[in-house]
Image (cartoon, rainbow, N blue to C red; front, side, top):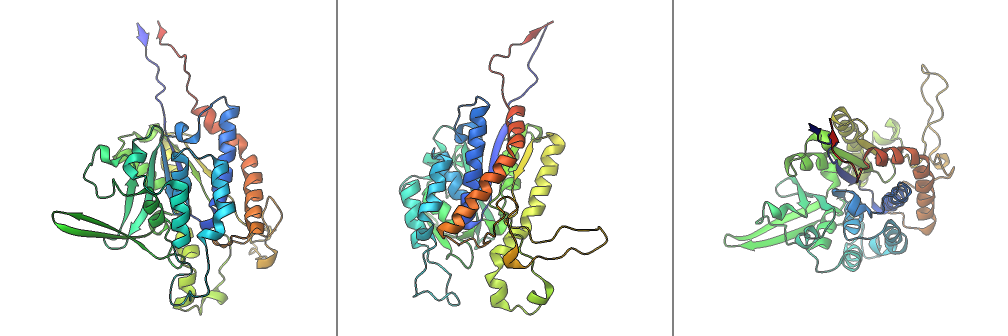
Length: 370
């Protein structure tokens, strides 16, 4: 009598948040993740180790780059060397009358880094991880799941043959920063239009959306799913009542990415962690740190916490003040983000090692005879 190996291969998901230029934080953490895979004796690039890589907004660019076999170092260089092209200001643009930036620089960078003609279907035909990108459809009012292998079961889906750079552009079109992007499709019924904006409107942290996709479309059981979710640094700037009580439409509009997108992340990550870990203990790992620490240490549980002056708030790891803005592309700020991400990821190396170890497969495992 023999017993089959009870350990089923886990369906591993890598989920990457939005956050503008702070995508460089994600790329730096991915560098440590790749290093820890090598330490564990796993000589696979990230797009071979994971089964599904999902990204929202700037995370879509990192996700697409990984699936196209770019290294974390190459992704870091995109943000460090081309950030000013992406967030390119001109004196002709008046933010009150238009978005803060045109999307011309972003389009150019995406075309050059991801390829001008490669389609989502072609990405899906590549070996390795499936790609999933989220963007929000403002016409039909739902989040579009741009999945690179959706065509395998739904060959007539309108986005299967759309170009990858367009899909990343739509996902990264953050309100107030960039204008929307509209897809156009023609069939025997006429012309269809699908205007899209930043996927962060629906899921700035895409881990829960990825979980739903894996269960519904990939037919995975929840106990067989594991997720590493990576943030771009948590915005911690306190918005005190006295400062916001008289905000007008313009004030609130300028803070949409900060307040509305960031506000959903905590509930999504907490919910996803509870769901996954209940069925698959240690199956969810969230890698995220505060950009700066906004409060003094609490002296007593019964005393209110004191807010540190905004210019004096510093990062826990570098002991430096870091700008929270998603479009601060100065080399000084990018270096601070990289330094903080490097120190943070080193502090989480044991957690990363534990995740890798718990998912390491035994190549030579043979059935046991009784």
